[in-house]
Image (cartoon, rainbow, N blue to C red; front, top):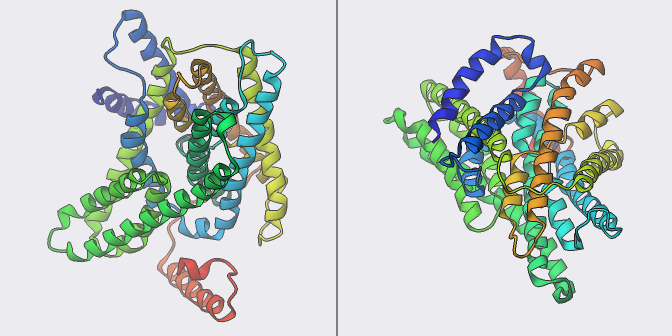
Length: 448
């Protein structure tokens, strides 16, 4: 079943990158979704059902891990740790803000009977917790093509990775409340919900770092069997994800921090050939997974699990756009008080506009129990509509907007040995100053 998407990926990549103007008009992810829709139409009208929709198990266990491992392993560490406070603020407070405001507004409008079907408060909050989080797959697919500067890239992409813990906690919390019923919820249930966030986030991070250190330790003894070095990185990285999910922790956070840890330590122990194999093998798996995800999103559009509700779809898109923008502006004001380089209005606009939704939301909404939430089909259809709006409308226009607003672009270049030496020297000196003064001026001590 996976052979056709791999073949399509090869042919498509060759054709996409030999047409210089195509990527300026349409992101690669948009074209992949269109191809998926065409395939879905052919399968639907020919009566072939051998290729089913993208199931949550397939997505979370097989498709998502290669993308997250690649992102974590090749994460720009300096930018990530320098902006860690801002990223955490947007990921935690921003996601909670979006989930609560979107859910409450959808519920409040539903009280007027505009939707034609009742939408209880807990159902609206459950849906908003799914749809409010920025998707790492969609962000990675678009932001890597427009080559936005490192600060904006790491802020939006870092938020999309770290808000997984918030999304998982909110989703499970509202799902549990829905099963319990509003009348059976007691105050301690809210306390448990808040506490579970710290368990999920910190637990996932700890699991990832632990497996990263295990990989670093094992790689010290592989100099006699260089051929298996890349295999250890893939296997131990995947084990970090499975271990976190096994204990209901954040698998995405575990895999992200496992990749960050392995990058710092494993790379010093493996050979150059293993490093090359690891680099291109990881990129290939991530690109293939990304292709399959977007194509199956298109294929999943053409089936009979939909229920279209015009007002619910329109208002959801309006609310996620408005409250994403308001949330970024409100959170940036206190953040700028602690940043060396403040985020200007153009940066805030790109951050708000770059809040794309993707397959994570689609996979989560498929898990919803239709017996508990009768409006599941409407929620699935609305989720796909939101994904299409953010990927096609925002994804296709963010590139021209970046050029129109003269947003600084990233400049990729190889540092000379002299630059690397002096950069490392200054990092150690600043880490020492932070240790002596007891003040974290730029997270040098953490990074060191």
